[in-house]
Amino acid sequence: MENVDLFGKSITDLADNFEDTALHLFHFQYKNNLVYQEYCNRLRVDITKVKSIYEIPFLPVSFFKMHDVVTTKFAPEIVFTSSSTTGLQNARHLVKDLSLYEQSFMKGFVHFYGDPADYTFLCLLPGYLEREGSSLIYMMDYLTNHSKNPESGFFLYDHEELWQRLQSLKKSGKKSVLFGVSFALLDFAERYAIDFPELTVFETGGMKGRRKELVKEELHAILQTAFGVDSIHSEYGMCELLSQAYSQGNNVFFTPPWMKLLLRDEKDPLFVNPELSSGQVNVIDLANIYSCAFLATDDLGKRRGDGMEIIGRSDHSEIRGCSLLLIH
Image (cartoon, rainbow, N blue to C red; front, side, top):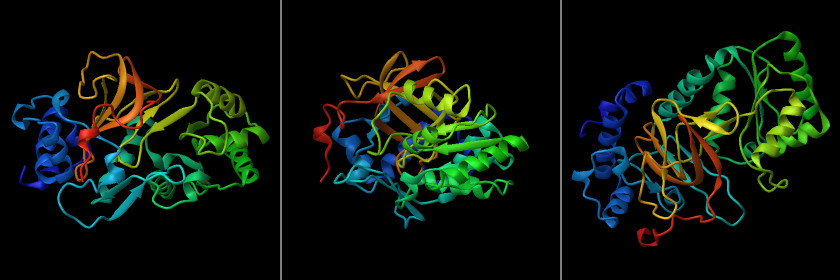
């Protein structure tokens, strides 16, 4: 894997032989990512015996709060940061090549929804707009700018303007997507209602301390009634990833071909097995060439056929049994 140009191809090509590519990338990252290498060494992993994706060590996402998780040395084009509760450390993802991210989210959207140019994108994302370094804002700004519809745009707190725009789009029959953070969508739903069954509504996550947290089923039921839609869509992403999984209803997520969601045992965080029906979620993201493609999240999941239901966060913010892995 000396020649990094082997990855200079379409993101969809990386998925042609997913397991071979993942194993190739594992060896490349072990050699060229000092944080990941040290993590594997602390686990006493014999990398010559890693023969399947289920034997690859998964780096806890919390390492992005403590270290610059980079593969090879480079000056980043951009640094994405996570939102966090006041006083807590933000995660930082140093991105070497923005085109990888752009290619991943564009092709990911096409995979599930078709050409972004055909859509009008409405973005109600105040919690993200009010800080710097949001990968979601970068993605939505890019999609908005690549839409052929001038009605696309961002709305901070102007719910009246958003409601008028939705009314206009409903009359015109244009394909429309509304991306909104949960608390902002609820604020909107309390004052406005529109029967717009053709609208695709995405809720992008929590209340950010603005409102009482609701279980997904309750939140989605409120939003379905307010917008007159049959289902609420969601996007599963984070600043540590360059790819996203999508749910088109029931909180069950599916991945594009260059990404996989796996499960690890809650009691044994190093045990990853395709036979597990529930556990904590691990992610392989082949677009994460220059950070780490193998991440252990704090999310809990249940296998639903070929998809994954995300059922919440673990009670433990760090992976149990991994305190020995802190690197100084």
